[in-house]
Length: 435
Image 1 (cartoon, helix red, strand yellow):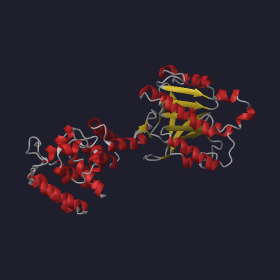
Image 2: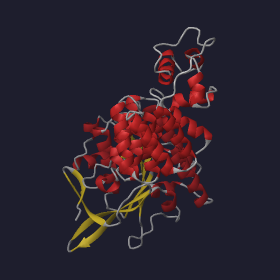
Image 3: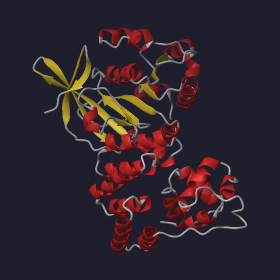
């Protein structure tokens, strides 16, 4: 740890001080707890972002035997008596910084023997156990700290980190959210939620195998041969996200007309009316846009002059800005290729995928597999490496019929199996059949 990290760790253990306030104090010239101990309320409130109530709380933390700061504190500073447990904690922190874990724990345990409510001792013990991989013992320390001071947001984040290390992601996310309930400015909790946010597919049986869903802001290739229900599968995800999570989505079709797509979805039970299907100038659940008419109305000679890759990026940027869309389906990559003349496809596709990723939304890209016997998930051989995730919808003949299977070929940041499970669709939507 750096010196700054060490100091911030000590600051956030002070009641009422989250990471954002700790950084304000540090950058304001308070580079140790000793600096804060010497500070007056006036010194602290001189910093933008530190109000009087917080300053008085910090002052009271270091001067528990003084009811209020004396008016002439600057001229007549009063020294507070260091308690026995504080001495043990200071020794433990020093040993911890030097990497002497065992001795540090012993000193912290002595501090808790003297004062079993010492928050700094409990927090540091939890951190030592967590860094050494003893997550259950770390959580015990954080639990005690939470019980002692329910308004302290810091142990909730630490508790979440321990749960995340045990692959208990959904419980960890609950902890991060609890930290933000206590302190909406907790930057660590915000970052952790961003890192671990999941987008549900609402395919029965699938989300459970994906740690709760697809990682938010992934670029997901949905691949398969013609007739494997790729469009229906992606549309069902948007439909359910819009209806159940009030999440705004855009379905961008480059070949099938909007009317045709919606007629087909109604037959599958995904009635656009159920999601308050909107015009492009409305701002609610879900927007379905169709640029197929551009292909019909544009002079065929001019189509080749259009930079379709950048046009798609610009359109998505506009829908994010105007509608706040969080998820988009691009149907399909094959249709986009038919509109585009590449000079250097690998380089151009690299920048296209990176621009999509920079938009900060989840993108499903439908792509046709023209050689179903070969597991080639992109026309130019780079798509599967540029994507974060690949979902393969596979058809297999069985007697006179055809069965549909779903496999997760790739999904970063996710523990998933590689088996292909039967995929069924009925009036209730999509579902996988697991053994």
